Length: 91
Image (cartoon, rainbow, N blue to C red; front, side, top):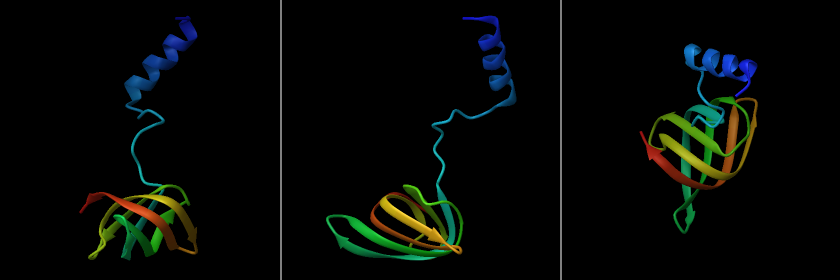
């Protein structure tokens, strides 16, 4: 290992920086709803969202609270629509 890459590795570990593949949601929403679409999948709608369109969505409060892994998401003006979602974890 070259001295420069070793220094970066030590600095990264000492700062407690998470690896790039750390599990975080692309969008985090205040509340939302989910509708079963069959085969264990859901259509998810949420409001009060922050983040960006991606594959993971976390809803903080309400009956749909939890984390979802979705095939498609769209986030605009803090409103989220997502389809082909599976429940990753319930709140």
